[in-house]
Amino acid sequence: MSQMLPSEIWLTQILPRLQVSSLVTFGSVCKHWHALAGDDLVWRDHAIADFHLVHSYHGNHGWKDFYVRLLDSVVYTWGENSAFRLGHSQGRIGRQSRVFHTAIPQKVNTLSNQAIAVITSGHSSFHALDGYGKIRILTKASIIMEP
Image (cartoon, rainbow, N blue to C red; front, side):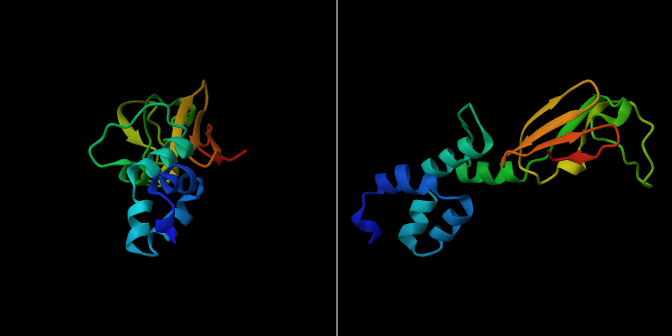
């Protein structure tokens, strides 16, 4: 039945409107649907829409791989960390770190695997927008709030 519609209709009108979880399920039905669901054009549209991308991706691995990597994003910060505004507040033994400046990028563990699309910093806080539209705010206590 899917072969009755031209591939162009599937790729430009139907599949881009599915949620990613539905797209993955769609691709597991048969070989033809798997090929349609894995098309680079479909994953490009999802990546641009879900992560609010404004520039084209020119990588070697394709849009589906790029999308998966965006879901598994890692955030690094460096600079002035007074008031723990960079999200680096926990030391190895669970106490607050006394390091107020870091020149080497440090991973922000509280934002790992959160599909972070955009980050910005303010005077005493750090804001991150994820691919699902949630804004996460890291403040002095390095607490994540989701307004």
